[in-house]
Image (cartoon, rainbow, N blue to C red; front, side):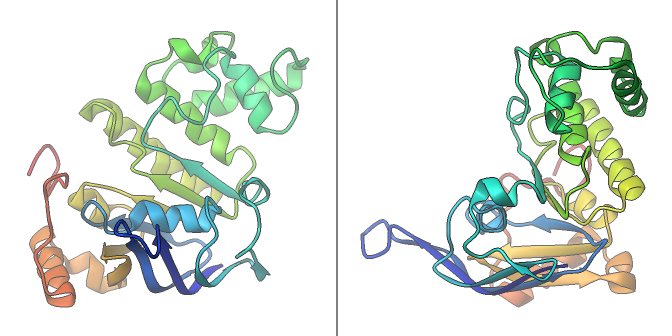
Length: 265
């Protein structure tokens, strides 16, 4: 379980550039939750992930992961228990290392120039075959030669090869072409299901937000204004979600970067 209690963060406090990024935010993520998160630019989505991952220390509040207080824990220590993917497919992997070297490094068994035994190579072939991208036959190719979708799929495997307590997906399909984005999202759903992961996924697609996982959050001005799950969520259409946001926040959602349905606005 992940629990955030009264978490706040202001950047550049006491200056004309002060920005209240998180405001007394409370969130409980139950084991096995797959939560989608949507909101306009500046709503606090990535800041929320940075607070969980330890990219900065929050100004106030408490963050508890599996009964451990991680509020002041350094980012590199949290990384052992928190997996994360970013929008940029170039992040999270070493372009000059082969696919199998990247997987070895992620598994905590070495990396570049490390000896990879036959059993380990077969394990990598098996998990790569699940991607249905033919990468199990290209394990000695450098990561830098892969397409964005292929690289993001391997990055997902790397982030979950030792299943984390929480997986954070920060618009990890947004930079991909539609076909690759659909493929990576499908793989994501399968990996989360097979590994029984607890996952939070920021998305810019409202249909995906309602069709993926079991719970949807909407953020505005550094706080969660909509939290819907179960049968209530199952009944919602995109228009219903927009109306819920307007009622809760007192304003309309800025949809400049948000897709209201698959393939467009």
